[in-house]
Image (tube, rainbow, N blue to C red; front, side):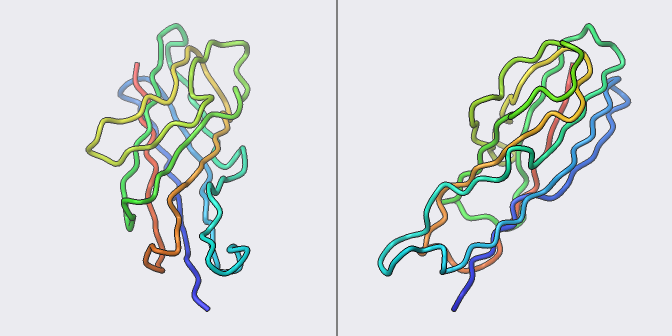
Length: 158
């Protein structure tokens, strides 16, 4: 019996002092997929596979609360297959003291660098523990059995 192992994310933490924004990202997702996921002979794996709704937590603390902040997301592939599509969506506003946040509630495809990065959302003011969920499609019995991995990178700019 063979297993298809899928490793989706590594943790990234960064502090962008040059732009006056502190950002912290915590969380990761490892999804082990096995032949028992197939319900009967001749079928393929069920898709999509989704993480929990708070798989990754993002905290943004800007030095200037009045400036509009853009949050972008991209991926850097470690071992990836072109048939796999990885998506992300924001599932909460975190703790935000009624600050403004727009976008990111619907799944968006995360492209690989150097493709254009995906604008995940915009906001003003600090946000603590915004939560995110991931979805992957394209997992199939025709993919080679191996571990697939990518790193998700968040970029925050004024």
